[in-house]
Amino acid sequence: MGVINVTPDSFSDGGKWFGREDAIAHGLELAAAGADIVDVGGESTRPGALRISEDEELRRVGPVVTALAEAGVVVSIDTMRVRVAERALGAGARLVNDVSGGLADPGMAGLIADARVPYVVMHWRGHSVDMQDRAIYADVVKEVTAELSARVTALTAAGIDPAQLIIDPGLGFAKLPAHSWTLLTRLPEIACLDHPAAPFPVLVGASRKGFIARLLGAGPDAPRPFAGCDDATVALTTYAALAGAWCVRVHSVPGNADAVRIAARLGEERQL
Image (cartoon, rainbow, N blue to C red):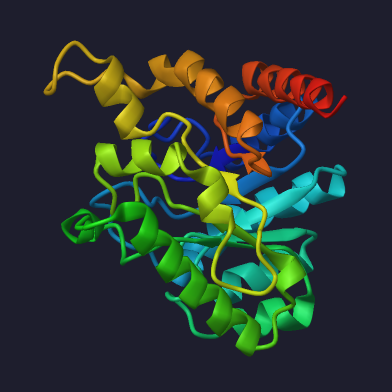
C-alpha cells in the first residue's frame, strides 16, 4: 500500500504532494512501482495535528481519488469521516482505511456494512492533538488486542461482515517507541483477536515513523530525518511480511515491494 498525503503538514513529506496534480502523478508512480493499493488521505494524523473541516478534506482528496480510480488504480481512502468515505467510494475507491476504527464517526459502521468493502480498523485512543497523552499501558499487546477485539465486536454487531475487516495495531498512535517495537514482535498474536472470525488480516504502518527515526538518530534529541528512514522501513517490511502481515503501508514503494516478494518466496520454501 503506497501512501499519498494530500496535506500541507504531513510528518513524512512536508506537503510534497499537497497539490492536486502532484498528488495524482505521485499516485500513478506508486502504482507503477508496484503498489497494489494507493492510500489517499487529506487529513494529517501526525502527533499534535489539529483537525481540518470536512469540506476541506473533501476538497483535497476528491479529485485525486477520482483521477486515480479512473486510471485503474486500486484506491483506498484514509479518513475518519463517513461523508468523505462515502464520496470516495462513489468516486471509485475500493477500501476504507479508518485510523479511528469507527470511533471518530458513529455513522461509519453503517456505511461499511452497506457498501461491503474492506475496512481497516486501527487501534486508536483519541485524536492526534493529544493522543500521546494516552500512551499508557501495563501490557501493550494485551491492551491493544483487547481494545481491537472490542471494536471488531461492535462493528460486526452493526452489520459488518467479519470477512471485510483488516486490523492495524496503530504503530505510533498513542504509542511510545517501546510500545511500537513490542507490537511489531507480536504480530501473530495481534491477528488472533477474541472473536470467532479470528485470525484477521493485519496491516502494518511502520514507514518513516518516529520510533524508527529515534532509533537511527545521532541521539535521543536528534532523530534521523524521516526521508532517511526508508531503508530501515524495507527491513521492517521484510520482517512484517515473514511474520504474516497482510499488507504494509509505505511511502517509498520499490524497495518494499522487493522485500514482500523476497518474503513470499521464503514463505514458499517453508511450506515445501
